[in-house]
Image (cartoon, rainbow, N blue to C red; front, side):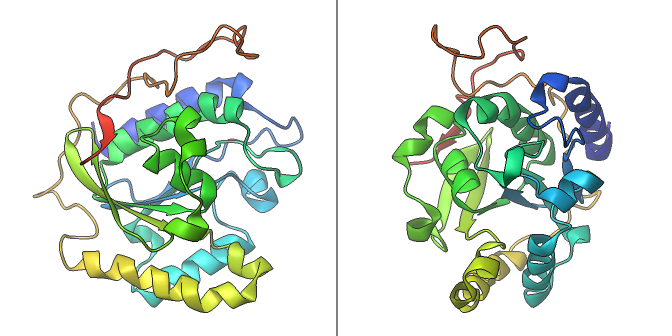
Length: 248
């Protein structure tokens, strides 16, 4: 199966899990968009209002900022893939909660499994902490915020492959603080240095479709504790994420 077909199957399963809906006013799944054969994956936080209405990430004002930043380094969404920590919009655009991330991030991890990017660009605090914490929600609190980590390259082992992690401010940050725009544009140039190292989009000659890609979200980030408020929910299938560890 192609990566697109694998992601389409995963999206279908995600849409059938109605327990993931956070705000009943926004029941539209916002799964991901872009090229599944890309070597570059951008991870944001959660859908805004426009994204939740259209079911597509980064189509609102923050998405327009992301498009401009991509254009500044010669990239388009045809050459990368974009996903979020949460697959549904939280109420009043509030921050993701730990129990929500526990339920939603296995679907994100599955996307990472399938796409197998060489570069992951984390946009904002939540995606940065989640990825650098080794895809472990409970360890996120031990990771510094994007204010300290932005523009600093991290190397990680993702599955069996080496992956470069580039934390950046979320594109929406410059909408609230225009003074960040120049620094954010400079940070985006860091991505450009990797564009000459490998094809942005995996071609048939270098594409390796995962033969053991999961057929359902088989990852959990932390085993549920006895006092987990969500323990009565139908759990996702569980498997260790021990293969997703930072390289030393």
